[in-house]
Each structure stands twice: as structure tokens, then as C-alpha cells.
Length: 405
Image (tube, rainbow, N blue to C red; front, side, top):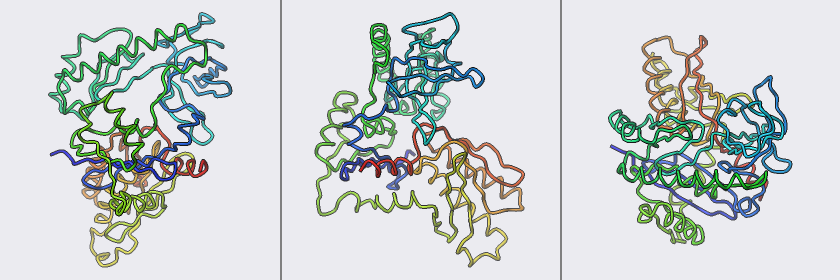
């Protein structure tokens, strides 16, 4: 049985807040500044540019590519073999002053520059077209039978220029709809390559839509009941987007106009945000988590706290850990934590309890749309997790928006 999903979009001053709900619980929080959108002050995730190689650092396998005057990004030179060059300066795979097509695939984080890739991706609702990666892939979250069917049906698309990845959202639509979108992405891909041949360096060939629109493209349509918008102007913009890109979603789009009971009160969004930014997170059983992001990794410490009534029970630690595992998975997603994450559960002596805990924890982590992997348990009983880095964590985005305002 699929989960009931809902999206809330609220404009507060000049900030757009987007909340994803599953079974009426807020599981993701995204925010973006309309000031930032209007000013277009910095390149955004997903933008495609004609960039120029400024420096090459061969000993770390990297180059730094300038996409706008004064803005350089990190680039993995192993991708150069399949890059689309608009101006090649030498015979080596990559040379200073080479001009090539690149896309921002990771935002700048603190002192680290943004990352660009020449493996261009064009993302649709149901599929992704990838330059450089030529395989035909299917989301691992789809049933095995459906995965095999898609691979067989799309085999005729196999070529040396681009590949296709079928997204999880394809589970609820017909094959014809997915194929139609793939052909549309192919037309866009061809048009971008054609324009790149005649455009000067630093040209932006594709600008990502506003962040709140991009967020909507990543919502699972399975179980999606409604997208509720609490601002007339935003509603119009989103309506226009869906009318052009996904008309089938329009019946689920709703303008919320109740001034007496705003969405923030109805769904306690401010309390959810406050909890997602706090270091301490209380559990229902009296235990608590301490979430501490550092430069290298994030540490989540599990504590028994006020869980005193049953402390004499042999499985007291196990009971706290079970609830902590569910909450830790939730906090990782809602805070958009990424990279290396270490969870320090309460020590347990029983191997059976550890196996049961890790099984539960893994199941919770697998619900995350972003690739999240439970790697191992160290000899010190620390649980290691990795989560794919794509966007900045929630606390950094909120801090940046507060600075803009």
C-alpha cells in the first residue's frame, strides 16, 4: 500500500517554504529566497554552461573550470573522455583553455567550490537522459519484473552518445508516457548540443527553474493527493509550469485561501522547522538524539535520557535504540544531511538485538529518495552511513536565507 503524500508551499516574506508530507508527517523541508531568484546572483544546481578550463591539478585528478567570470568549479578530469568540447586546444584529454559543456551537479558548500560535470543530465518526471553514461538503467526502487520490462522495452534506445535512467515515478504511469518524455528529453538534448557549437564561453545554455519548481519535479507522484499553495502569485507560477510540463498534475494543485487558519498553523510547520534545526531531538520514550554536523562528518548520538521507568529491563537500551533508529533516519532526511554520518547507539551486548536494530534501521533509511547506505558497524559499535551529497543541508540554507533577508 503506497503512502499518502502531500506538498505544502508557503510564502513567508521573501522566502518560499516547501514541505513534503507523508501520512501527514513532514519528512522534507526546502526553502529558497525570491530575492535570490530575482537577482540570479550565483549559478544554481542544474544550470548548463560553456565553461573554460582554468587550471589542471593532475595529482588529484581534477581541473577547475570557469563558468562565469570569477566563478570556478571543481571538475573530475576522468570525465573528459566523454565531454562535449566546443573548443579543443590540444591533443590531451583535457588542456588549459579548453571550452566544454558542463553542468552544476553539486552546490558550493562552505569553503568548497561548486562541482560541475560534463556528464550532462536532463531530468524529467519519469526519466533522466544522461550524456556520457550510455547505459539503460531503471530505479532500484521499482519491482524486479517492472525493471526487467523497462530494460527490454528501451533496449532499442541504446547508443554511444547518451543513456536513459527510468525514475521511481514511472511506476504509476504507462510505458508510452515514459517513452514520450524520453523523446522530449532527447529533443532538448540535441538542441543544447546544437546551441553549444555557436555560443561563446560562459554562455548559460539551460537555467534551472526556481528551486521550489525543481523540488516539485522530485515529488513521488505515487500516493500524491494534493499540492497546496498559500499564495496567489506562486500558485499562478506553479500552475503555468504544470500546464506546460505536467498537465496531469493540475487537478491536484490547490490554492489555499483561509486567512483565519494559515497552513503554518494547520500543519505546525514552524515547530517542525525548529525541531529540524535543534541539536537535541527528544524521543517519545524519553530518550533523545544529539545531532552535530562537523566539517568532515555528522555525528548522531543516542542517549537514554528520561527513559527511567524501565531502565532495569535487560532490553531497555534496545527499546530506546529502535525508536532512535526511526527518528535518526527521519532527521537525516528532513535536515538533508549528507556525506559520512556516524550514529552512536546505546551499547548492547546481544548480537540478536544488534541484527534486529540494523535491519530496522536499514529499512527506514531505504525510504529516503536520496541514495542512503548503511555501510557497517565499527568495532566500537558505531554505525556508519553515507548519503549522497547533492544540495546544502537545511541549516546552511536557512542561515544563508537569513543573511539575504
